[in-house]
Image (cartoon, rainbow, N blue to C red; front, side, top):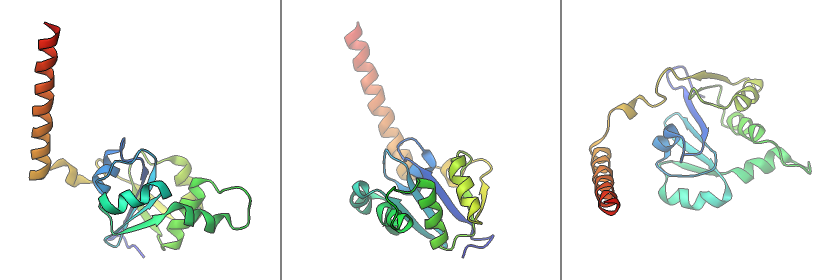
Length: 161
């Protein structure tokens, strides 16, 4: 169980548009998925379509199929449960009592989680403060991207002349 010092971190977002999720997982995925960091362990809950690619490329310790959790919540019901119910079930199953979420965390998800007795705190400022300081590899990649952009702009200007 997470303590105040070991507050679980939770993100539900697509990593192709959410910088916090991309920073946490290091993989581009276009649909929302679940990231949970609890007691130093990083778990991703993903669709069946993305799980194999994530296992090869994502930065995580554990990969869980969303469909398995969905079946657990659905039981014998004919209709699939809403995403937020599956999310709350997952957190309850993991024993999460408190979690930190980014300021843009979806309200509907937060309401369902709180109904299960799980306290949420939003981050003040950056969800991952370490994002402010770039690693040598990140700097190298930024420099490369700038060189490519510069080359493209020069070529575009030549064509337009």
